Length: 502
RNA sequence: UCCCCGAUAGCUCAAUCGGUAGAGCGAGCGGCUGUUAACCGCUAGGUCGCAGGUUCGACCCCUGCUCGGGGAGCCA
Image (cartoon, rainbow, N blue to C red; front, side, top):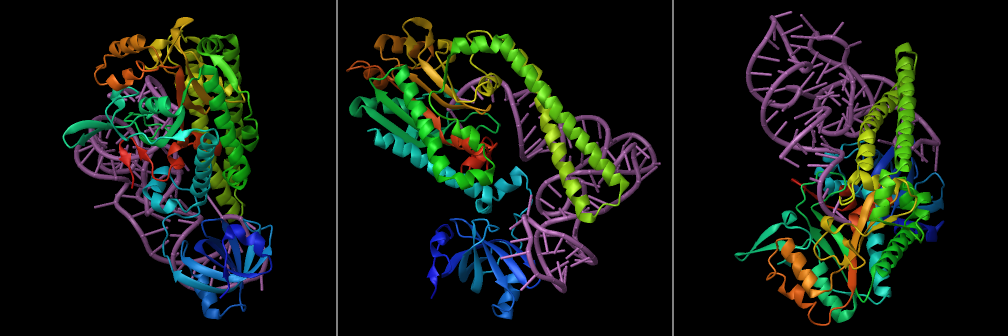
């Protein structure tokens, strides 16, 4: 029996005969030779089948084998730059385990809804595969970052009795007759644990019943939350900066091939180095209302318009070519495909062009005291190449547990981290209010029942210390790093508002 | 909850002025010894989302509904 090898290990078996176990990803028969693209979970490999080198009936069976059929192939490994992984297999023998017919996901384009309806199969496709591997690296990098720095993992409950983030977004659960809800954050529990271990983190699913139908929202997502005793805002910023840098570095070193396949912005990721940009909310507001921001928006608008004109010109040319006729059939088809592409790009540009003045106006009319809107965040992050910290938001715009800045009571000691290139928020965090009376007052102001928060208040009665932490959304981080526009492609089985596919 | 866009073959899309539909991919068959979402030829595949209205005539115009996409608010 030939040695079983995984595609990722082929480089160590040059010129040897090996056996791959996998699935047929694509095939290109070409008369007396066939090219089978086989995937095995670790990668993709081109397998060459030449007529005469294997039995004729096997050759024929392979020629008619459907996409995603399961099979084993044996043959000699050789280097081949034209093969996806750089190595190919010259097939000497093959065994078909199950011949699949009419696999629904073809090698061409599909709509997002169709793909999610077939998510159980779509996971096998190249893009979800790349993203899933990067997600794995991101999660591993996060755990290592905290474990290497003496953080203790504390698993906080998923059924919870208290709200952390606003009560409208809770999923309620009937817990043997008692109404509980699914966790929105482990933070409050984590603060309790931090007073025991000093530095802690939790990592788990988070549930928010936000009625947000956008490409940035899931109702079930994964979040890592560190919490540290004896830390100030600067310490938190450094921690967050270090975490994000180490995640990006790990992905750059472990998943470069996947980033390339996805067409991610590798040069942009390489610029993610400390120090990140640090702005206070007040400075951010000044930037948004400044002439520079308006200039920036105008430049963007003219850029969009230039792109639009270029696309329209190309469209006209293609249509003229088509009307003239005399094109080969494959050229016609290529043109038709390009036309569809241009139209969808034009649609998107049109939206951007329409939104630009609105966003510019929103930014210009920004008044101190408001929370930063999505478009404001986009402008701020587009104006900088590196991630941007925004700190010291107005108290009114933020959660009750955030510590009031003692030197300016109108603001709290919090921060958001905006990923670059217009991606938006991936981290939110704060120093926590550690004074009993102030915290009690804030709970009352929010209209919450202090009795529900009795144990949380207790933490301020017994050895209260300055402490704080933050939450980083895994899917948003993965979406930013991979350049994926839909957050729902960044988790295997996404849960959306009003829609759970599988 | 609100605003914008869409629904045509299994999938992705086209159909000029209102005159009962057309490509590619996929599937099936055939051709091709180095392909790269291969290519070339042939075949099959449709209650144009649902209900109503306008009209001699509706994929096309109008109303309602259902489903989907994008965005706002809110957030990681």
